[in-house]
Length: 461
Image (cartoon, rainbow, N blue to C red):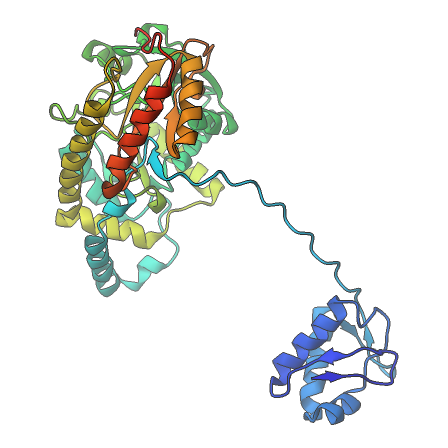
């Protein structure tokens, strides 16, 4: 319904009869924002507007008072009510970044199959939490995380990974990205401003540590893991159970040397539960609990979107990390923490991991069997990925071919910290593809490798 008045405001007011006080206020705000009621103009009197719209004068008076409090109108004793603010300029359209084309197939590394999330077990645990948890769990929480989850993790990590994990020294964080940022800040506070990473390693993690105030350097990796003799930094981030991306496991003598090196070691145990040719190698942390931070996550076992990870800390780092948690203002939600604690305590988490271990082993075997003759994967039979080494120009050809075959996979070259001319390769994940699409993804990979030019395909390690 459109109305106009013979005041200094000569514009239609779009108002829907029956919308009452809220509808009238919205119509007046729109008229002012659109510039139909310009700043300084006199608006209709409450009596006139109420009469014309068939409303109680008190309703119109309250709307005027509300809009005056919000800054849309101005009033003064003995003077008419006027528009107090200029109409807002239309919001410019936010530029939409180009979206990469959707791929039909995926062999991206570092991701589990999202279709295998244990929905029924998660739902049952959620119901138990909501029925049994005291009201206090929905208040502001301990910055270390849920006591129930920390106790459950202490028991689980001890039996599954050999970690010495006092619940008081466990801090739950919002994913490993958050955890490594916390560690970077905490190390800076205790006077350690340089952190080494394995070379190659995940470039995103190096960037996060640098943003936290750390100088980042690289230490080479070979077939026995990190070259500990070349480590000169006061802190180092390693993946000893299954090096990412090359897939090797750290040799026993190097584990012992690293534990005795005096450096603060951050052990990223991102997929330690998934070993297929033998029992999983135990965590490094047990060799030197006061010099090793054990970092774990459910991003590979359950789902990365849960944003749940943990740090098992040496005593001297607990308070600095808690200070960094407070400064970051980021905490994982309490409800998922309690649900995860319930899954672990009930045994459902262990059962899920056993099922996934069998499935991912079968997928890895299928992937290796599907590789054309001459292509040999690097690393041990573990985790959710394998690597095919090749010169950089072959990697570039493979990536271009993958685009033509609608296949997503990972590249090795961005993970090196130094010269990459002869350090190309593909990092191929076998977890992310839904089970019923895995065969199609393997077919696309075979086609990609067939298009790579003949020549040296595998670099010596």
